[in-house]
Length: 373
Ligand SMILES: [Zn+2]
Ligand SMILES: [Zn+2]
Image (cartoon, rainbow, N blue to C red; front, side, top):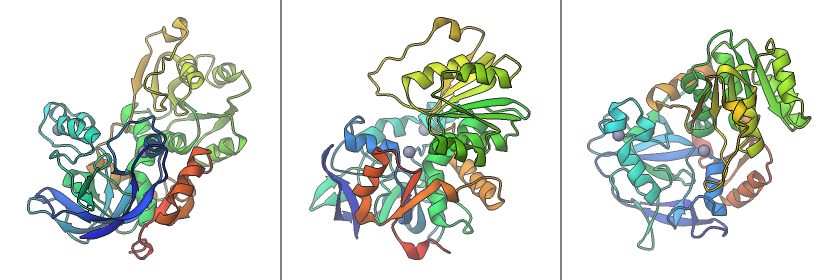
């Protein structure tokens, strides 16, 4: 079958919307007709060249749509199901899957960086030339083929544009609070960086019942938004008094849980400083992989626990439907996270805006007819 997709041929060049061929389905494959897909910083890293990936490639790892067809071995979904794509599918029987860490699934971590699906092959081509998959999702397209563990069925009641952003940014933030850190009811939390991921950490902390939730950001508009997403207090990250202000809100100790979601040297340093002795530090932000990060040794003392979270300890088959229910029951916000909706043809302008730091999530509407059930 033929379908349109945004193809990246080389870093630093514009994406081109081209008509690709999709090979017949393998036994574990799910063909998804995509309704919507978000633009995420991890896509932008490939365009800018800081994340090296095989080319040509169809980017996009935050998408939702409707199952069009399934391979002979697929049992978890059927045509017509509404699904959110997971960018971290797992095999279910390797070392890490059996040790409860599906995010580190070995077939996935072996094949995904090569731009292949879990079986080590590709399905997409352009004039006979293979086109690579991105994180096994490639959602900046009218259709995608994903492994069945990467197509998670959810309620038909959620509009698919809202559903799409659950696949990366929302899961990453809420999961960091609820799954990775297991924020306790009544506890204190600081979130440094209140962009799309940080806002979701805030609402994850609120879901978990944290009593004091402090949002830290340089931008007054972001601090204002943080209050809507669950922050009980906000602090200007640029005024130099963040540590004192947080200690002032927490009996002089610092917070039980400190989350870093800004991705700068300064915010990584600050995250360790503001956690109380015995507290938890969770790093979500990213700096260049070759970059060194330094800390004041004294800030690391006091039995602190530091963890890196990339997908919020996600177990998508449970967590995506659970997050959808939280939305449908009014306990989390998704609508204000989507600050722009564009057509696939406008994808380059969308990434330009992301690079300038504008808005929260831009969502490509791939099939307006599918947005409402
Ligand atoms: Zn596995
Ligand atoms: Zn992402």
